[in-house]
Length: 115
Image 1 (cartoon, rainbow, N blue to C red):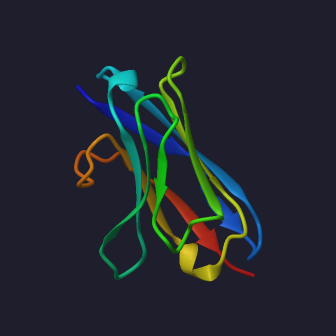
Image 2 (cartoon, rainbow, N blue to C red):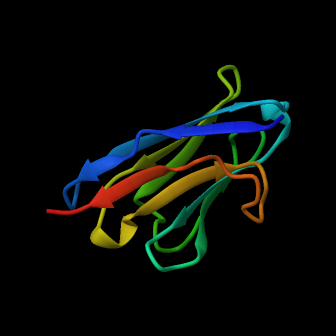
Image 3 (tube, rainbow, N blue to C red):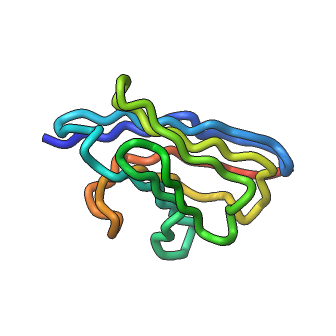
């Protein structure tokens, strides 16, 4: 079955950087667009970024545009999210999925931005 395992989260100071990873299995990774979502405490699920099957087209929610970079390595079945210039509002659980609506997410990785 589909399995998505996110990692790379942690505690970081404002202005810092983190790189999230998502290892996928149970489906043909290279045939699917991939997406990052996040959910802050007390808030709903929010789309963050998407990448097409080959990695040549990327899309970002306005709030993260210019700070986050999505990428993928189809040879390693792995999705990445490089997050720079982090701010307090980026604090959330981050999830990857191959579903554009956010279904079928992994267990998530927590990102906390705090001084």
